[in-house]
Structure formats: C-alpha cells, structure tokens
Figure 1 (tube, rainbow, N blue to C red):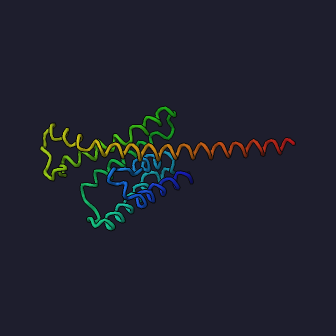
Figure 2 (cartoon, rainbow, N blue to C red):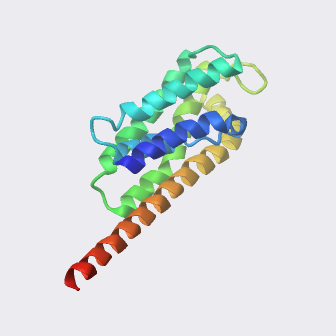
Figure 3 (cartoon, rainbow, N blue to C red):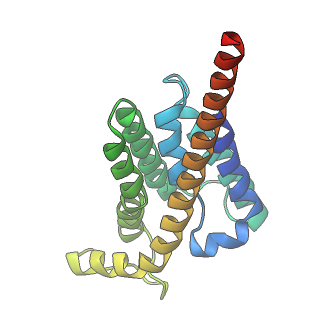
Length: 185
C-alpha cells in the first residue's frame, strides 16, 4: 500500500513537473486511478487519486492561466472514477485480467473524454463538431494523436509500478530467506 500511495503521489508530481508533455497528453492519470483502485485500501482507493487529480488540475490551470475548473472536465473525472472502480473490481482477479485492465485503461479514457469533446467542445478548427455519428468519428479521429501520449503515460507508469513492486517483493523474499538461513544456523 505504501508503494501505491507513493506512485499516486508520484503521478501527481509528474503532472506538475512535466507539464510540457501535456501537449502530447503524456500524463499517468489513468494509471493513477487504476493503481489506486487496485492497491490502495478500499476507503482510499477512489478519492485519493481523484483528490490528487483535482489538486494538480487546479495548480496547472492557475499556472497556465485557464479557468480553475472547466465543467465538461467532469466527464474526465467520471472516466477516472470508472477506471478506479475497474481497479477495485480487479483486486482479486488473476494477473491476466489485471493486465487486460491495464491495457484497456487509456482507451477507456480516450472514448469517454473524446465523447465529451464531441458533445460540448470544439474541433481543432475551433468549430463545434456535428452532432452526428460522422461528427463523433471526426472527433475520435482528431483525438488519435493524443491517444498515443495517453498510452505512453499510463502504460509506462504502470510498468514502473510493476517493476518496483517486483523488486520490493524480491528484496523482501531475499531478506526472508536470509533470516531463515540465520535461524537454522
């Protein structure tokens, strides 16, 4: 759990420190929500990642001169909440299912956030999208370059978490073997 807390806080710090990567959407916020759901205590699994997201959103928006909160962003928060719930649901599942959740996370966020852009936002040409299936597909197509960054940020951060957890598990296993050997000696 301590590693999960550090990783969630680390994702928030990464968002603030690496703000120049935001143009490419490289920020591990989906990973933060999924890892929070999978590894934080049930009392903290959903609200801690959302709180870190909200605090970093406010700081970034103030720093960049944007409004403190943009109401269609509520769809993004809903996506993160859904990803956190997916993490909660994955807690007791097999590794294969967890890997599936990890792989799905950036795509789930992409589908929800771009739906909100289609519904309430503007195209890159600064005109509203047609409220048709064709307009929705245009919106998803325009979002594809940002999906690449979302995948890089989420999968990269989750890989870092997995490697850290494996290293900790291995280190604790070696300590346990050493203690057992000392006890037998």
